[in-house]
Amino acid sequence: MPEGKAILLQRAMALHLEERHAESEALYRKTISEYPDSPEPRHYLGFLLMQQGKLEESLEFLSESLRLDDSKAEWHYNHGILLSRLDRKEEAIESFLNSLKLDSANYFGWTNLGSLFEEAGEPDQAEKAYLAASRIDPECPDAYYLLSSLLASQERFEEAKYFNCKGFIKDPAKDKPRIRLAVAHFEIGMKSDAIAIMENWLADDPENPVPSHMLTAFRGNDVPERCSDRYLEATFDHFAASFDSHLEKLKYRGPELLEKELLLLDRHRMEILDMGCGTGLNGMILKPFSASLTGVDISAAMLEKARERNCYDLLVKSEMGQFLQKEKDRFDLVACMDTLIYFGNLEPVLKGVFSSLRASGIFIFTTEKCESGTEYDLDISGRYRHSQSYLSGLIEAIGFETASSRDAVIRYESGRPVMGQICRVLKRGSIDVQSVP
Image 1: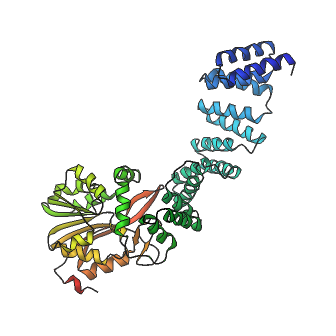
Image 2: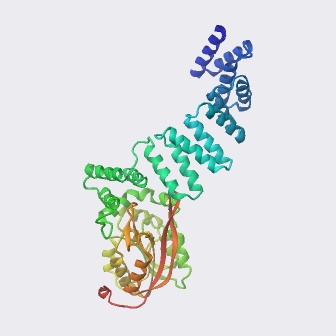
Image 3: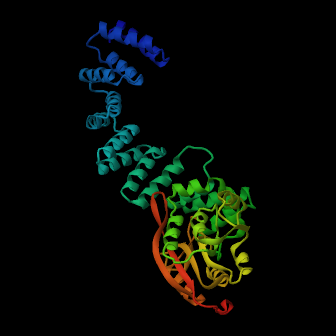
């Protein structure tokens, strides 16, 4: 490069870096005027114009620089970025491929290429590009998140969850919730790391019931028959403020499932108990069917949110079993949506519900589906799952008659449907529940 051209270009680039754009642009144009066959000032002027949003003019200079010299990977990459912004996908793909032929180790070249393939309806090529990026820099989360989104759109939920967890672990964001971090490690097979995170949390805060409960779930042994009251209070008091928005993100279907069951009934003006009422989402569904609506929850913060909905006649802070012991033959309907998932052994709760119902009373509830071959298990979510055979046997033994029982999607997690059961059972008679084995 002649010395005069080099000096002009260096000055222009220095001004460019200082964001003195007008002066930089003038020097780039001066260099082009004096050295019309030089590709460098054309490329950098094109790049400056792209930064300023002058896309069509930028394309003219970037394309001309590549006509003069197509040996630089960075120039093809910048050309691809510009074509992407102009929505010229096929040409952008070609530019990124040209760039990667010259420099196959460009992480963002692969992620940009993957995004373009995805937009162009070529998911297989997109997946290969994202995987290539993840191999180049395994510590960067972007490719993992992009892969997760792509795979979820194809309903490949287990793979999507795996890459989402990898992205979350590698994400440099500070103050990540330790419970989510531990679950992410567990989900990708790093069980010992997940346990270590919970053990360290418990060591830092020995009185906190959350890490203690999650350690039990991760280890999978000595599983208690239900979540402790302390764990439930701590968890739901903490989440009360954001609970409704969190359920909305999870596409929680409890109110929808409950309403469908209620519309099948020919009863109104009932004495209703909303057991584990939370913030009152289901209370709004139950209210039109009630003569009186009672909500019970162990979390005071949840009850405050439920009170704001102004749909309950009575709200009670209590553990469910203790509440049911005091209420004999009182209710026509008990609803328990997304609450039995915090109990493994359901016999005490179902006996209590049976006792609290009047003759021919109705119990509507949901559970999560257990496929492990056991009666119930404790998932790493911290929630219990129950088998259909366990539910059916218990319902019959206690004295309920099944009116309706079906599998249903309860919510979505990481784009994956969480399967459960929605059951509607009737109280057959007034047997002595204490005699049930």
